[in-house]
Structures are given as structure tokens and as C-alpha cells.
Length: 366
Ligand code: NAD
Ligand code: IPM
Ligand code: MN
Image 1 (cartoon, rainbow, N blue to C red):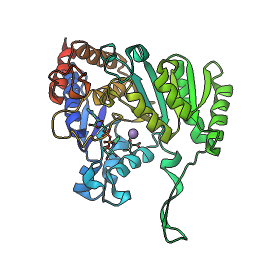
Image 2 (spheres, helix red, strand yellow; image 1 turned 90 degrees about the horizontal axis):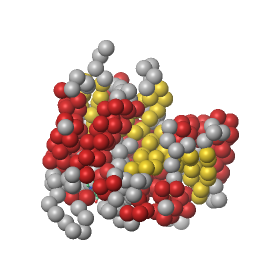
Image 3 (cartoon, rainbow, N blue to C red; image 1 turned 180 degrees about the horizontal axis):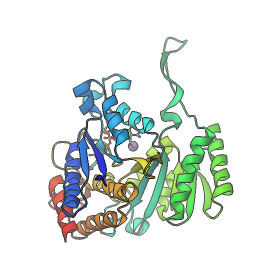
């Protein structure tokens, strides 16, 4: 059988820095008799600089052909003046949309060694393990009409449209219920059914999927603003949260601080099953290109390394190796290894991005 194939798209800013550490982990698995066929490509600003577009058709075709895509991050202040459709972020949105990666799994887990690094109290976050399932290919990110137009009063109007169909809601709800069955068997759905029709439909359709297909899973509904508050008040009340594209973006960044740093959060964006039975998939950290620390060797590579662990589990049937990699991360944190984003108030000397990658590979080999 051919080696499993991976397309790596490092992107911009700290993307290439954290991806270099992922390559070390992939190479290590290669030495253990689990080789991957790895190709690289450009996305975001790097692609815009080279080809004048943030995602070329050729790169997209390669992404559609491999078993899984691994992405760093896109964006940077140097592209702020670029036409909206050619911005780095547009490349990311296009690859998600064209691959139809509708279910974005964003787990937030608090490693015991980091329980004191959260901005919340240890007793609130200790042992936290939640899964946010964010709808990723619809909603206000993609709804029409959209744009900036002149208005009738000599000014301008900016328009975006929140739009969800029955099918779009049902399929992401199924992903959440499936996930819940493998975890704590509870789903909390978040919307604003009190002010938005799309929220009313969301609530009704999630309830429909529950009643007709997953009556064994416990389902609750919450307004998303209360959800944001509950997430910082008592995050361990949740198991799986399912929500729309925009709310999911906000809630997952907030959830990052429950784990100690945005540099800790991985994600998996999954679509329909391919011929091999595995879902179409793209794995990426939740964080962005972090222009404020790019090029300084300060970035935490753990979010991206944990994204590889998710790829091993969901795309390559390598659950044991995924667990082994997650344990290696846990071990280096328990040993006191920290990148700059994980330095507590007492300070200390942080590890560089590359030294953190080396420590994780060394822990894997132990
Ligand atoms: P960001 O996530 O890049 O950074 C927010 C803060 O977190 C910064 O202070 C940064 O230094 C820190 N941070 C992020 N990742 C880190 C890591 N791995 N290690 C240590 N610290 C880390 O968000 P932003 O500053 O709002 O956006 C910067 C650019 O990234 C923008 O162009 C934005 O559109 C883009 N972005 C891309 C993605 C993506 O590619 N998936 C996600 C979010 C933002
Ligand atoms: C994320 C990012 C993206 C989003 C941007 C860069 C398009 O914030 O992946 O969370 O809003 O989805
Ligand atoms: Mn985001």
C-alpha cells in the first residue's frame, strides 16, 4: 500500500516556523516504520507574493488529491491594503469552502502542568476537556448579499448576510452528536434564537437531528452570549458545543485561554468521506500568523503538533500514535519546558520554537 499522503501549507508569519517542528515529528514517525509522502505548497500571503493569488487552482487540486492537508497560518499586516478577494485570509476561506470542510473540531484541553497558566483559576480549568464543533463553510462568512456599497445618503453601507439551510445545520449537528457519543455524550448547541431567524432554524434543526437520530445523546440549547459567559464561569459544564461559523470562531479563541495559551489549540476541519472511507480533512492550529512574534523563534509549536496528532487519529487510523504524540506533549510540559507564551508571572528562560520541537521529539523517542 502507498504511504499516506500529506500536503503541508505553512503559510505566513509563524506558520513556517511551527511547521518546521511538525516536520521533525513526521520525520521521526518515518524512522519508526510509519513513513508519509509529504509535499509542500503555498497559501495565503506566501502564495499571493509568488502567484498573485492566495490559493492557486493547482494547490487546491493537490489539496483535493491527498489524504490530508496540514496548514500553518495565513495573514499579515503587509496585506492589509490588498483587495479583499486576494487577501491571505481569502485563500484559507476558499480552501475550506471548496473542500467542503463543514465540521471544524476545536478541542480545548487543559494539561495539568498548565493549570496555573490560564488567566482563570486552577480550580476552574483543571481537568478541562471540551470540544467545540464549529460550522465552517456557511453562515455570515459566506452568505450573499455581501459587499461595501454607496448608500443613498452619500455614505457607504457594509453588508454581510447570515444564512443557514436545513442541510447545513443537520450535517454539522450530526458531527457533534457523533463526537459526543465517543466522549461524554452531551451536546450544547449555541445560537441567538432570541434575535435571529437563522438562530431559530438552527435550534429547531439541531433538535430534529437529536430527536430523530440521536435521542440517546443529552442535548441542551443556550444563547451564544450566555454561552460565552458560561465558558469562562464554569467551562467544565460542557462536553461538546456545536455552533455556527462566527460564534464558533469567537468561542474557540476564548476557550484557548482556558488551556493557558492560544498556542496550545489544534483543530481538524472535516468534510464528507472520501473513497477510502476517511473524511476530507485539513488540520490547522486555531491561532493565526502572529505577526508580533514572527521571525523571532518565540512561537509555540504545540497547537500545530497537536493538529498533526488529530490528523493521525482522524485521517490515518493511527490512534495509538496520536495518543503517543499527545503524551509526549504532556510530558515535556510536565518536565517544565515552556515557550514564551507559557511563562508565568515568575518568569524564567523560555524555550525557542525549535527547542520545544526537539524536546517533543526526544519525549516521543523515550
Ligand atoms: P493571532 O492568533 O495571530 O495572534 C494573537 C496573539 O496570540 C498574538 O499576540 C500572538 O503573538 C499570540 N499567538 C498566536 N499564536 C501563537 C503561538 N503559536 N505561540 C505564541 N503566541 C501566539 O491573531 P491576530 O494577531 O488577530 O491575527 C494575525 C493575522 O493572522 C491576521 O492576518 C489574521 O487574519 C490571521 N489569522 C489567521 C488564522 C489562520 O490562519 N487560521 C487564524 C487567526 C488569525
Ligand atoms: C480562524 C481564523 C479565520 C476565521 C480567518 C483567518 C479567516 O480566525 O481560523 O479561526 O475567521 O475562520
Ligand atoms: Mn479565529
